[in-house]
Length: 318
Ligand code: AMP
Ligand code: GLY
Image (cartoon, rainbow, N blue to C red; front, side, top):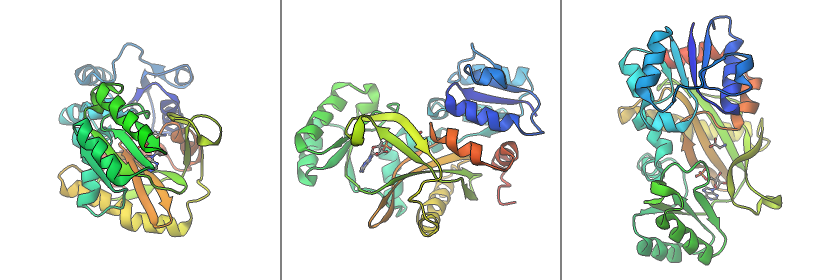
Protein backbone atom coordinates (compact mmCIF):
# COMPACT_ATOMS: atom_id res chain seq x y z
CA UNK A 1 0.00 0.00 0.00
CA UNK A 2 1.33 3.46 -0.89
CA UNK A 3 0.83 5.92 1.96
CA UNK A 4 1.16 9.68 2.30
CA UNK A 5 1.55 11.23 5.77
CA UNK A 6 1.01 14.99 6.02
CA UNK A 7 3.05 16.92 8.58
CA UNK A 8 6.60 17.45 9.73
CA UNK A 9 6.84 17.05 13.50
CA UNK A 10 7.87 14.40 15.99
CA UNK A 11 4.27 13.20 15.88
CA UNK A 12 4.48 12.49 12.15
CA UNK A 13 7.82 10.73 12.70
CA UNK A 14 6.15 8.45 15.28
CA UNK A 15 3.19 7.78 12.95
CA UNK A 16 5.49 7.05 10.02
CA UNK A 17 7.70 4.79 12.17
CA UNK A 18 4.66 2.72 13.17
CA UNK A 19 3.32 2.57 9.59
CA UNK A 20 6.70 1.60 8.16
CA UNK A 21 6.69 -1.52 10.37
CA UNK A 22 3.56 -2.85 8.65
CA UNK A 23 4.17 -5.64 6.14
CA UNK A 24 1.47 -4.04 3.97
CA UNK A 25 3.32 -0.72 3.66
CA UNK A 26 5.14 -0.38 0.34
CA UNK A 27 5.95 3.28 -0.45
CA UNK A 28 5.73 5.76 2.42
CA UNK A 29 5.86 9.52 1.71
CA UNK A 30 5.85 12.29 4.30
CA UNK A 31 5.11 15.90 3.37
CA UNK A 32 7.09 17.87 4.30
CA UNK A 33 8.64 15.38 6.75
CA UNK A 34 11.75 16.02 8.85
CA UNK A 35 15.22 14.64 9.56
CA UNK A 36 13.75 11.64 11.36
CA UNK A 37 11.24 10.68 8.70
CA UNK A 38 13.98 10.95 6.05
CA UNK A 39 15.46 7.73 7.51
CA UNK A 40 12.29 5.66 7.11
CA UNK A 41 10.28 7.33 4.33
CA UNK A 42 10.57 9.67 1.38
CA UNK A 43 10.22 13.32 2.37
CA UNK A 44 8.24 15.51 -0.03
CA UNK A 45 9.55 18.89 1.03
CA UNK A 46 7.82 21.07 -1.51
CA UNK A 47 4.26 19.77 -1.03
CA UNK A 48 2.12 22.20 1.00
CA UNK A 49 0.00 19.99 3.31
CA UNK A 50 -2.70 22.68 3.54
CA UNK A 51 -3.16 22.96 -0.22
CA UNK A 52 -5.87 20.35 -0.86
CA UNK A 53 -5.55 20.44 -4.65
CA UNK A 54 -1.78 19.99 -4.51
CA UNK A 55 -2.14 17.07 -2.06
CA UNK A 56 -4.79 15.49 -4.31
CA UNK A 57 -2.58 15.86 -7.39
CA UNK A 58 0.36 14.24 -5.57
CA UNK A 59 -1.82 11.41 -4.28
CA UNK A 60 -3.18 10.66 -7.74
CA UNK A 61 0.24 10.83 -9.37
CA UNK A 62 1.76 8.40 -6.83
CA UNK A 63 -1.13 5.91 -6.51
CA UNK A 64 -1.61 6.78 -2.85
CA UNK A 65 -4.10 4.43 -1.18
CA UNK A 66 -4.15 6.09 2.24
CA UNK A 67 -3.51 9.67 3.36
CA UNK A 68 -2.85 10.21 7.06
CA UNK A 69 -3.27 13.83 8.14
CA UNK A 70 -1.12 14.71 11.17
CA UNK A 71 -1.71 18.38 12.08
CA UNK A 72 -4.97 20.21 12.70
CA UNK A 73 -4.55 23.00 10.12
CA UNK A 74 -5.08 20.86 6.98
CA UNK A 75 -8.00 19.08 8.69
CA UNK A 76 -9.70 22.36 9.57
CA UNK A 77 -8.97 23.59 6.03
CA UNK A 78 -10.91 20.63 4.60
CA UNK A 79 -8.09 18.68 2.94
CA UNK A 80 -9.77 15.39 3.97
CA UNK A 81 -13.04 16.43 2.29
CA UNK A 82 -11.35 17.06 -1.06
CA UNK A 83 -9.43 13.75 -0.97
CA UNK A 84 -12.50 11.70 0.03
CA UNK A 85 -14.58 13.28 -2.68
CA UNK A 86 -11.93 12.10 -5.16
CA UNK A 87 -12.15 8.58 -3.75
CA UNK A 88 -8.87 8.54 -1.80
CA UNK A 89 -9.13 6.98 1.69
CA UNK A 90 -8.15 9.42 4.45
CA UNK A 91 -7.36 8.91 8.10
CA UNK A 92 -8.67 12.15 9.61
CA UNK A 93 -12.04 13.89 9.92
CA UNK A 94 -13.67 16.21 7.42
CA UNK A 95 -13.74 19.96 8.03
CA UNK A 96 -16.93 19.85 10.09
CA UNK A 97 -15.57 17.13 12.38
CA UNK A 98 -12.35 19.13 12.73
CA UNK A 99 -14.40 21.99 14.18
CA UNK A 100 -14.33 20.05 17.45
CA UNK A 101 -10.81 21.45 17.67
CA UNK A 102 -11.03 24.39 15.27
CA UNK A 103 -13.59 26.30 17.33
CA UNK A 104 -13.85 26.14 21.10
CA UNK A 105 -17.31 27.72 20.89
CA UNK A 106 -18.42 24.91 18.57
CA UNK A 107 -17.00 22.20 20.83
CA UNK A 108 -18.46 23.72 24.01
CA UNK A 109 -21.91 23.99 22.40
CA UNK A 110 -21.56 20.42 21.15
CA UNK A 111 -20.74 19.17 24.66
CA UNK A 112 -23.55 21.16 26.25
CA UNK A 113 -26.09 19.96 23.72
CA UNK A 114 -25.08 16.33 24.23
CA UNK A 115 -24.68 16.24 27.99
CA UNK A 116 -20.92 15.63 27.85
CA UNK A 117 -19.29 16.79 31.09
CA UNK A 118 -17.18 19.94 30.70
CA UNK A 119 -16.45 23.24 32.49
CA UNK A 120 -19.20 25.86 32.76
CA UNK A 121 -18.61 28.55 30.11
CA UNK A 122 -19.83 31.37 27.92
CA UNK A 123 -18.63 32.62 24.57
CA UNK A 124 -18.17 36.32 23.64
CA UNK A 125 -17.46 38.52 20.65
CA UNK A 126 -16.93 41.76 22.60
CA UNK A 127 -14.62 42.66 25.47
CA UNK A 128 -17.16 44.42 27.71
CA UNK A 129 -19.49 41.41 27.98
CA UNK A 130 -16.50 39.07 28.38
CA UNK A 131 -15.18 41.16 31.28
CA UNK A 132 -18.61 41.26 32.90
CA UNK A 133 -18.77 37.44 32.81
CA UNK A 134 -15.25 37.22 34.30
CA UNK A 135 -16.51 39.29 37.24
CA UNK A 136 -19.61 37.13 37.56
CA UNK A 137 -17.59 33.88 37.60
CA UNK A 138 -14.78 35.27 39.75
CA UNK A 139 -11.16 34.07 39.75
CA UNK A 140 -9.67 31.59 39.19
CA UNK A 141 -10.96 31.25 35.64
CA UNK A 142 -9.79 30.39 32.17
CA UNK A 143 -9.77 32.63 29.08
CA UNK A 144 -9.52 30.97 25.66
CA UNK A 145 -9.13 32.27 22.13
CA UNK A 146 -11.82 30.48 20.12
CA UNK A 147 -9.71 29.42 17.12
CA UNK A 148 -6.43 27.60 16.51
CA UNK A 149 -3.52 29.16 18.40
CA UNK A 150 -0.87 26.41 18.44
CA UNK A 151 -1.72 25.47 22.03
CA UNK A 152 -0.95 28.96 23.32
CA UNK A 153 -4.40 30.58 23.22
CA UNK A 154 -5.45 29.51 26.73
CA UNK A 155 -4.75 31.63 29.80
CA UNK A 156 -5.39 30.10 33.21
CA UNK A 157 -5.93 33.20 35.38
CA UNK A 158 -5.47 33.00 39.13
CA UNK A 159 -6.58 36.64 39.55
CA UNK A 160 -9.36 38.65 37.94
CA UNK A 161 -6.88 41.26 36.64
CA UNK A 162 -4.98 38.55 34.78
CA UNK A 163 -8.22 37.35 33.16
CA UNK A 164 -9.11 40.89 32.11
CA UNK A 165 -5.64 41.34 30.62
CA UNK A 166 -6.12 38.05 28.70
CA UNK A 167 -9.48 39.26 27.35
CA UNK A 168 -7.79 42.50 26.22
CA UNK A 169 -5.02 40.53 24.51
CA UNK A 170 -7.42 38.19 22.70
CA UNK A 171 -9.57 40.99 21.33
CA UNK A 172 -6.43 43.08 20.71
CA UNK A 173 -5.17 40.56 18.15
CA UNK A 174 -2.45 38.64 20.04
CA UNK A 175 -3.83 35.39 18.60
CA UNK A 176 -4.91 36.88 15.26
CA UNK A 177 -8.40 35.97 14.05
CA UNK A 178 -8.43 33.04 16.49
CA UNK A 179 -9.10 35.60 19.26
CA UNK A 180 -12.09 37.35 17.63
CA UNK A 181 -14.32 35.14 19.75
CA UNK A 182 -13.35 34.40 23.34
CA UNK A 183 -14.51 31.55 25.56
CA UNK A 184 -14.46 32.07 29.31
CA UNK A 185 -14.89 29.14 31.62
CA UNK A 186 -14.58 28.01 35.21
CA UNK A 187 -11.24 26.54 36.25
CA UNK A 188 -11.27 22.79 36.77
CA UNK A 189 -8.84 21.09 39.11
CA UNK A 190 -7.39 17.60 39.05
CA UNK A 191 -4.83 15.60 37.13
CA UNK A 192 -4.98 15.97 33.37
CA UNK A 193 -5.17 13.03 31.02
CA UNK A 194 -4.76 12.85 27.25
CA UNK A 195 -6.72 10.04 25.70
CA UNK A 196 -6.23 9.33 22.00
CA UNK A 197 -8.82 7.09 20.42
CA UNK A 198 -9.24 5.42 17.06
CA UNK A 199 -12.71 5.73 15.56
CA UNK A 200 -14.44 4.87 12.30
CA UNK A 201 -17.45 6.97 13.25
CA UNK A 202 -19.28 4.07 14.90
CA UNK A 203 -16.81 2.25 17.13
CA UNK A 204 -14.32 3.96 19.40
CA UNK A 205 -11.14 2.23 20.60
CA UNK A 206 -9.01 4.14 23.10
CA UNK A 207 -5.24 3.88 22.95
CA UNK A 208 -3.13 3.75 26.09
CA UNK A 209 -3.66 6.89 28.22
CA UNK A 210 -0.99 9.55 28.46
CA UNK A 211 -0.19 12.76 30.28
CA UNK A 212 0.94 15.98 28.71
CA UNK A 213 2.92 18.66 30.51
CA UNK A 214 1.88 22.03 29.15
CA UNK A 215 2.92 24.86 31.44
CA UNK A 216 6.35 26.45 31.28
CA UNK A 217 8.61 26.97 34.34
CA UNK A 218 9.09 24.93 37.49
CA UNK A 219 5.99 23.95 39.48
CA UNK A 220 3.77 24.65 36.44
CA UNK A 221 3.86 28.38 37.11
CA UNK A 222 4.42 29.61 33.55
CA UNK A 223 2.18 30.09 30.55
CA UNK A 224 0.83 27.16 28.55
CA UNK A 225 3.11 25.90 25.81
CA UNK A 226 2.25 23.60 22.92
CA UNK A 227 3.49 20.69 25.07
CA UNK A 228 6.75 20.29 27.02
CA UNK A 229 6.85 16.54 27.55
CA UNK A 230 4.69 13.52 28.02
CA UNK A 231 4.39 10.09 29.65
CA UNK A 232 2.27 6.98 29.03
CA UNK A 233 0.37 5.34 30.57
CA UNK A 234 -1.16 8.10 32.67
CA UNK A 235 -0.77 7.05 36.34
CA UNK A 236 -4.12 8.65 37.32
CA UNK A 237 -6.23 6.95 34.66
CA UNK A 238 -7.59 3.90 36.48
CA UNK A 239 -9.76 1.17 34.90
CA UNK A 240 -12.79 2.59 36.77
CA UNK A 241 -12.18 6.06 35.33
CA UNK A 242 -11.66 4.54 31.88
CA UNK A 243 -15.05 2.82 32.09
CA UNK A 244 -16.73 6.05 33.18
CA UNK A 245 -15.10 7.97 30.32
CA UNK A 246 -16.25 5.40 27.80
CA UNK A 247 -19.84 5.60 29.01
CA UNK A 248 -20.16 9.36 29.62
CA UNK A 249 -17.70 10.88 27.16
CA UNK A 250 -16.29 8.70 24.36
CA UNK A 251 -19.42 6.91 23.14
CA UNK A 252 -21.73 9.93 23.47
CA UNK A 253 -19.22 12.02 21.48
CA UNK A 254 -19.01 9.52 18.63
CA UNK A 255 -22.78 9.03 18.56
CA UNK A 256 -23.46 12.77 18.59
CA UNK A 257 -21.03 13.42 15.74
CA UNK A 258 -22.86 10.76 13.78
CA UNK A 259 -26.20 12.35 14.58
CA UNK A 260 -24.85 15.68 13.28
CA UNK A 261 -24.12 13.96 9.98
CA UNK A 262 -20.33 13.99 10.25
CA UNK A 263 -19.05 10.61 11.41
CA UNK A 264 -15.51 11.10 12.68
CA UNK A 265 -12.96 8.83 10.97
CA UNK A 266 -9.52 9.19 12.47
CA UNK A 267 -7.92 9.84 15.83
CA UNK A 268 -10.03 11.79 18.27
CA UNK A 269 -8.08 13.26 21.16
CA UNK A 270 -9.92 13.75 24.45
CA UNK A 271 -8.19 16.26 26.73
CA UNK A 272 -9.58 15.30 30.14
CA UNK A 273 -9.45 16.73 33.64
CA UNK A 274 -10.00 14.06 36.29
CA UNK A 275 -11.91 16.25 38.76
CA UNK A 276 -13.36 15.23 42.13
CA UNK A 277 -16.78 15.33 40.35
CA UNK A 278 -15.63 12.86 37.71
CA UNK A 279 -13.81 13.20 34.40
CA UNK A 280 -14.58 16.30 32.33
CA UNK A 281 -13.54 17.30 28.83
CA UNK A 282 -11.20 20.30 28.67
CA UNK A 283 -10.79 20.09 24.92
CA UNK A 284 -11.09 17.89 21.88
CA UNK A 285 -8.36 17.66 19.27
CA UNK A 286 -9.21 16.25 15.87
CA UNK A 287 -5.86 14.43 15.48
CA UNK A 288 -3.09 12.61 17.28
CA UNK A 289 -1.57 14.60 20.15
CA UNK A 290 1.88 16.08 19.92
CA UNK A 291 3.95 15.02 21.84
CA UNK A 292 1.65 12.24 23.21
CA UNK A 293 1.90 10.22 19.99
CA UNK A 294 5.65 9.88 20.51
CA UNK A 295 5.03 7.85 23.69
CA UNK A 296 1.70 6.20 22.79
CA UNK A 297 2.44 4.66 19.38
CA UNK A 298 5.66 2.91 20.50
CA UNK A 299 3.42 1.03 22.98
CA UNK A 300 0.98 -0.09 20.27
CA UNK A 301 1.45 -3.81 19.62
CA UNK A 302 -0.95 -4.08 16.69
CA UNK A 303 -0.36 -3.08 13.08
CA UNK A 304 -1.16 0.66 12.83
CA UNK A 305 -1.85 0.43 9.11
CA UNK A 306 -4.45 -2.27 9.67
CA UNK A 307 -6.18 -0.14 12.30
CA UNK A 308 -6.14 2.99 10.15
CA UNK A 309 -7.56 1.08 7.20
CA UNK A 310 -10.34 -0.25 9.45
CA UNK A 311 -11.12 3.34 10.49
CA UNK A 312 -11.43 4.51 6.89
CA UNK A 313 -13.44 1.44 5.83
CA UNK A 314 -15.79 1.48 8.82
CA UNK A 315 -14.74 -1.97 10.08
CA UNK A 316 -13.06 -1.03 13.36
CA UNK A 317 -15.50 -3.19 15.36
CA UNK A 318 -13.93 -6.26 13.74
P1 AMP B 1 -6.89 23.65 25.81
O1 AMP B 1 -6.17 24.22 24.63
O2 AMP B 1 -8.32 24.01 25.90
O3 AMP B 1 -6.59 22.20 26.01
O4 AMP B 1 -6.15 24.24 27.08
C1 AMP B 1 -4.78 24.09 27.28
C2 AMP B 1 -4.52 23.78 28.73
O5 AMP B 1 -5.06 24.80 29.56
C3 AMP B 1 -5.14 22.50 29.25
O6 AMP B 1 -4.39 21.38 28.95
C4 AMP B 1 -5.18 22.78 30.72
O7 AMP B 1 -3.91 22.59 31.31
C5 AMP B 1 -5.52 24.24 30.77
N1 AMP B 1 -6.98 24.42 30.87
C6 AMP B 1 -7.84 24.59 29.84
N2 AMP B 1 -9.11 24.71 30.28
C7 AMP B 1 -9.05 24.60 31.60
C8 AMP B 1 -10.03 24.65 32.66
N3 AMP B 1 -11.32 24.86 32.41
N4 AMP B 1 -9.60 24.51 33.94
C9 AMP B 1 -8.28 24.33 34.20
N5 AMP B 1 -7.31 24.30 33.27
C10 AMP B 1 -7.68 24.43 31.99
N1 GLY C 1 -0.31 17.86 23.47
C1 GLY C 1 -1.38 18.72 23.17
C2 GLY C 1 -1.89 18.65 21.81
O1 GLY C 1 -1.51 17.81 21.02
O2 GLY C 1 -2.73 19.48 21.50
